[in-house]
Amino acid sequence: MTVSLISLCRTCLLAAAIAMLPIACSDPVEPHGDVAAAYVDWLRGNYSDYVFDISTAWSMTPRSPYYRVRVEGDSVVSATDENGDRSRSAATIDDVWRWILTAHEAGELNSARFDRRGVPLEVDMGDRARDGGGAVWIRSFEPAT
Image (tube, rainbow, N blue to C red; front, side, top):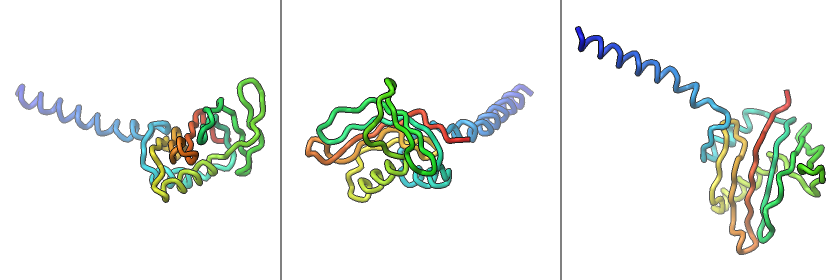
């Protein structure tokens, strides 16, 4: 009887763990590095209105502060840092995806992490020491409701 009860408890625990697995894997910010899957997730989301924070470093330039970017209709409508200073140039996440895909096709994507919505979180591409690469950091993505 004891063996059957232990076996039953193990089966119940295993079933409970399996039932919880899809919930744990569906966390939208759980990072991964699969470029193709992330791009499909991004396209599937069909995001055209959203806000996010972005910081970049290109070639020999230092890392920028984070800018809060507001995108409406797939176009940047504002980009300001925490002091309210405006960015001279700001990118949409679609722009960042163009950079990623170009680097990936050229074999120059050093590393990339994405959330489960396909939002790039950290990207390193090219060779910044040779004036040909850059890095992008994105946080606080919020789609419009």
